[in-house]
Image (cartoon, rainbow, N blue to C red; front, top):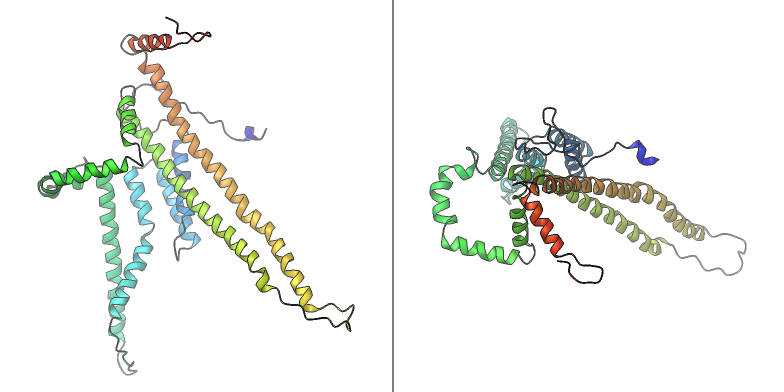
Length: 362
């Protein structure tokens, strides 16, 4: 009954109005599944709001999450989404460069005595120039980061760094195309293969592009990777915050012994009189016990619901990709070339079929 209040979700590919084939190879499409923009918007806004940086108010995080969610919902390019995401942390760059310039200006150990008769307009102008330099440095750094992200996401674009003359005429032939660099790259791939099955993933990709259009596969994989990365990073920071609050509560439980005051010795003359220290010691465990409800309602329950909801959202995006891949292989791959692949698959399946007695049927 509860599930009836939620909208029905489908993992089937969307059908265009003029497209009679459900799995037509529309390589120019950017949206294939239901609520694809909404899933991306929820993922990136959740990630941005969950990651808390130093000296950042909740309003800044809300505005940044709303902006990124809108851009993801409108299906902007991933390089633009990533660049805007990085730019939302520009205040950290501003604080970093401000501290560096303040340290540089205060490098002298000689303290000057302020002169009350001296005109302070020059000092005000120097402060303005200092802030202008910081802002110019931050903007330049953000533009450089944006260009690097654009070049990595669009390496074949006309304005990409990899298509520039500096890279084509200098860096590529004299650095990246040398035997030393190739040797280092091969050693790196060999060492990283112990952690990540690069060869197996490459073989699986080469097998998939025989059944699916590579451009369609790239678009679907980009969507799944974008959603998965942001949700998993957000859930990781959410777990860190929850463990921090849980550890603070454990520390408070350990400090109960330090907060408890020793009761005075009773000589027997003041029977029936309650000591104020004793009543205070009894109130400390009660106060700690009352805080359990606050911890459960405001920390444990939100953590549980966020893990369930965003974990299910990530699983929904994965099932959209997986089910579409299975349907594409069954409907398109097996019946192409007059059904030769289907006949070959059926022949292999019948040759490897075991009878109930354990013998192969031929």
